[in-house]
Length: 96
Picture 1 (cartoon, rainbow, N blue to C red):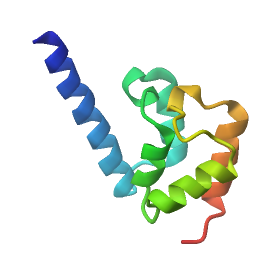
Picture 2: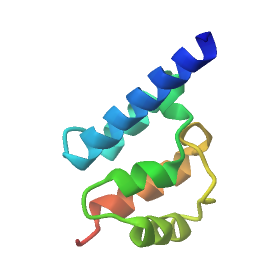
Picture 3: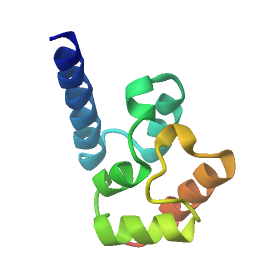
């Protein structure tokens, strides 16, 4: 029962973050900062975060991951400094 309750909390928090990203209430840079201290956010896949951004779907997210040399299975906590900087740069320069 405790594990089930925790899973519901995790799914709810992740869904709320994806909605905030989709509604432009939070930026990718802010998510990177939160992921350092938040265990739930840091366990999310980078591609899921990218797909939640407005104007980015599966294809563009995959292209961004490839451009920045990031494995599609990478989680937020596994992003290196160089990788996160590449993503920030790519997202700031994107034309949608």
